[in-house]
Image (cartoon, rainbow, N blue to C red; front, side, top):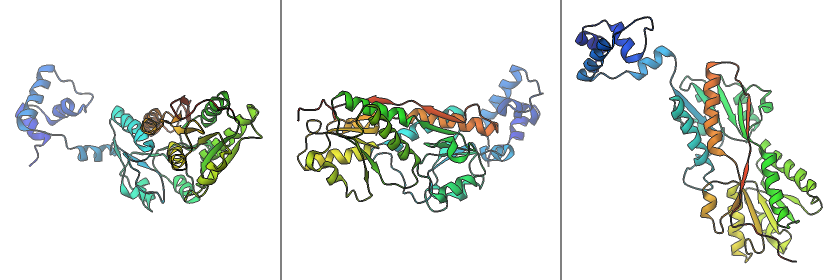
Length: 340
């Protein structure tokens, strides 16, 4: 049977209140000498005493656990496949959890059809939502959330400033990519976006692309191309050499463009320059290595936990929306335009 606090007290010849003060930092008004404290710690070690975390959490009405979710209808994300977006973001979230002493949990129920169960049943002290896809079902579920929550990839205004949010500066990031390609001499530039509905972040990137190509005088030669789930537009995107540069809305889509170009004899970057968005370690695995807008996913994940812990202790947080600037990591998939 587990050793109790009272047994430690009896072994050390002190009251249970003293043991609670020494081992759990409770009973703040009780003064204990260092000699007595050492006797209590030795008694606990001799008896093999361990704190009952579940009982402590029940008394404190805290679980010291944060849940991570991304809404209704999504499959389980993978750490070791694809663009490594999820791995990079979760690395930061876990870093934040360690910093503040919280466990990080991805419960299967969060990824099925009833994530709302985990948003109100007491298993989590707080939640992090990391998806940019805001269907009406997901919006309604978030509005009903009864525990503190921080949203990643959303503007605070999407929910009338009800929730703290963390995001990157999409406009600035797209501007860096457009400037890079324009400075290399490219005029016929396409932005390839995926046709996910209810994705405010994709709309922002498309709007930023329009603004920045207009700023560079490229509005007549730049285009936005929507790629559907079965990728039927990819061949059309690459056919005929219409575009000399493509900016993809994420690294995963950029990698598909690179692989298709190889199969149909298009040289990258000789015939076509390609830029992605996120710039995880995945970009270095591609051949050629992918130039990409650097979204600071690790820092965004870690900062979301800072913001969540702050909101769990106070109904008013210092910064309702935290926006990170982007960078641009130039690799081998872009080069100056060839004479045409």
